[in-house]
Amino acid sequence: KMGEGWSWVQRDRQFSNEEAAREGWEQVKRDLSREAYRLYVLDEFAYPLHWGWVDTEEVISVLRDRPGNQHVVITGRNAPDELLSFADLVTEMTKVKHPMDAGQKGQRGIEW
Image 1 (cartoon, rainbow, N blue to C red):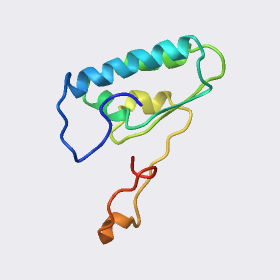
Image 2 (cartoon, rainbow, N blue to C red):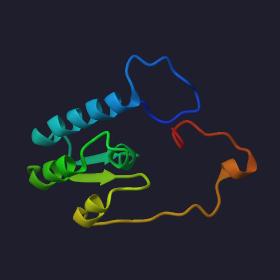
Image 3 (cartoon, rainbow, N blue to C red):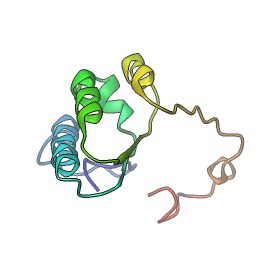
């Protein structure tokens, strides 16, 4: 887990969400270069790209030049067009029904 994550709870922050996103990306770059994992899930990473916190062209360059056969999944809305063009697979998901619609609170292991 990197960054600040998603929560309704306000936290005392030692650094900003933007800094956390950049720090998380720096760790992912290190892990990619040393082939630490075969699969990376950069959950909600499209947001820091969309907001300009992390440079999209740098991300594309790092992904293009990564060694081995590592797979990288990036989720989130508003992914930059450049990333969509570069990606091998792009999926758009739409909620049809969710337990929160009926008032159920988020569950550990499901929503966080």
